Length: 445
Picture 1: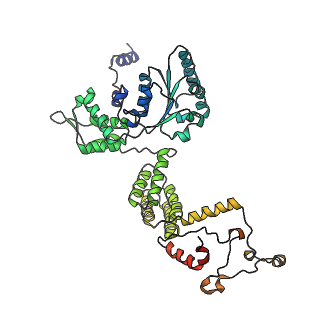
Picture 2: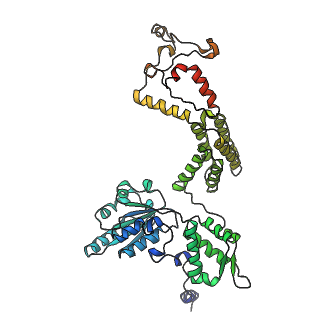
Picture 3: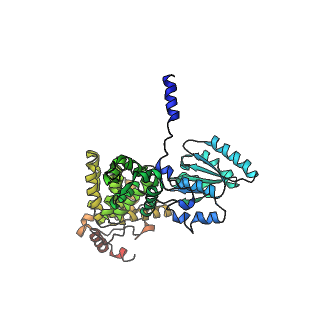
């Protein structure tokens, strides 16, 4: 026997590798699915659709490990439909059209087909277009799964033909149920005699972050790395969980929902004057690998848009922070961002400057550019002087207090007020000064 044949003989004689724990624990019925009560509970959307035998084509939208693929397969079983699955990463129009052709023939024979496309957001417009007719005429029930916002990633015609169903990250209660089922019902896990205290469970749930697959993978790896004690029990500790996963992996796609959700939460926390929440989201964004200059740039914008003249030093500090982050780089740049974030979150807030900008733009769009008053025009030539350019102009410094009270707006916009300073922070002094200077104009508002 040659060496090659001996190797193949050894492979043929070896027992097949056991499937991963996550696959062994995959629910075998909709009743076994954990979480997503709003969809699969007694009054859930999908439960009602199944009871009525009227499942619409749908987009299952949510983070990884929340049961989207399993749900699609079990829905097909519940409806006694032929289940055809495609991955948008591995397939194209050719494979899709072949499945749709078979489904059309089966439909004529009275058989239904459920076509499941994982990561539907990976299909381009032409590929998604290929589904439209089959979905429209009921040749297939289409179920697409995506981690991305379908509003942006699924074409309008297909989206309008589908029900969008949101899958939420699994909460701790749901994760706890999955963990207990793994320890109790899986023969291999039960044989290992695993023990986890409450602190370790919370650590495991934190690592999983609502992802059942990640939860079970972490448990499986940790369980096989821990040695049993004298009584044969494997006691998993928090550090075992950390070691098994070699650190934490955050869901944060720079082009996807997680990116926009976290940045939005960060900015809105600063705007809401909550430095604690702002710091949390800042750390979360940085740990996920975001460019610190992106965060610094957002803070510069916020300093004007949401703080403005209520604390004008905010813009100075934000701009200085941007420059410092650029010069220093990570990891020390995080300290600079933390200072800027906490300062801006703690500042009094005013969007009066931003609203003045928007109000002025609105008038410009509504009325068009109005003629500049003659007294504000510079009489550079003799003709301009003859046309009365500059006539009536009042030099502010010739008047007491440096204020002349001269009207500068075009005639059609006379006495229009765009800037409404608040009474918060340093802007209150601006408000009082403008009300004293422009008492007549501001008394009309």
